[in-house]
Structures are given as structure tokens and as C-alpha cells.
Length: 232
Image (cartoon, rainbow, N blue to C red; front, side):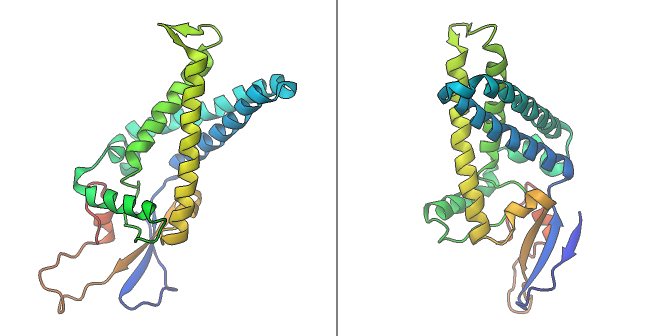
């Protein structure tokens, strides 16, 4: 794990560290899926609402679909063969961290007035949602490619299913963007730039053993473990 001290922090009771959390392959998968999804949503809207450019938009729609498939395939491979924070288990609900999930709900409901809890890699509240997003992306891709030859499968009208999954993904994109902006505005982990550089910022509170007795000290390395509790 790469660690870089940040000397600009002046609080004597805290230390700031910069850790590599998101590796290059995961960032590539993230931005490929993000770019592909946004392009698909835009071109899909043009196909449905702008007949004068619909034919050209269809071509761009399929190009964006291949970009999405590349990123999605890479992300699914990382779920199985990636690093510790990239694998499937890190996105599953963790019953030992329900307190963080509750704090995240309070943070959102208060529009950032309540403290933002700390975590190492995936947001404990959003992790399971990311799994649902991956499922939605698989479904929208499958129905999109299949609807031309098999519009009806087992009684399901694939064009309608394709639009339904696309609408669900669109809602997720809006919620995700709002959440990320709120995190960077009220938090300290630099969530936006972390998906560009791979590094997140951690503010670690120092504990004086002479003043606090019986308190367990937790290092950043322990925070890094997906199954560990937050140091608060």
C-alpha cells in the first residue's frame, strides 16, 4: 500500500495520509463505463426524441455500447480476479458496519450537516447499490443487442425492458453525481480526484494513551481491510 504523509495539515492531534486505493485497471473500468453510460443515455434520448438525427444517433449509440461493454467486462473480471478492494465481497452488505450505513443515511438526509463517516475503499451504503448497477448494465446491454432480432422473449417485450433499465441507470447516475459532489464538499477524502489519481486522503486522529485508558488504537492499515470497522 502506497502511503504519502501530507505535511500541510497543522492540527497537532491529527495526521493526514494519502493512500493509493483505486488501481489503474479499476479506474479505467470506471471511466469507460461512465463515458459509455453517459453517451448511451444521450444518444438514446436523441433516438427517441429527435427524428432528424435519429439515424446518426443509432450509430453513435452502438459505438457507446461497445465502450460500455469493454469497461463492464473489465470490471466484472476485477470482481473475480482483482485486488482486495476490487473483488465481489467488498460490495456485499457488511453487518459489522451497519453503524456507518446509518451515519451515511443521516448525512444525506441532513444534506451534509451531519458528519460524514469514514471508510477506506467502497462506501458501505453504496457498495450493494454498485452491484445492482452492474446487473442493470448487463441487462441494458443484453436487451439492447437482442431487441433487434428477438423483440419478444418469453412474453417480455425487450424494447420496453431496455428503456426501463436505461431509466433506472439514469436515476442512479443523477444520485451518484449528487452524492459525490456532496462528499467532496463536506468530506476530506477527495472522492472526486481519487477516481482520477487513485489516491484518497485520510485524516487520522491521534490518541494519547496517558489520557485514554482501555481504548484500542487502529491504524490506517486496519482501516484498509474491508471487513474492519471504522476508527471512529
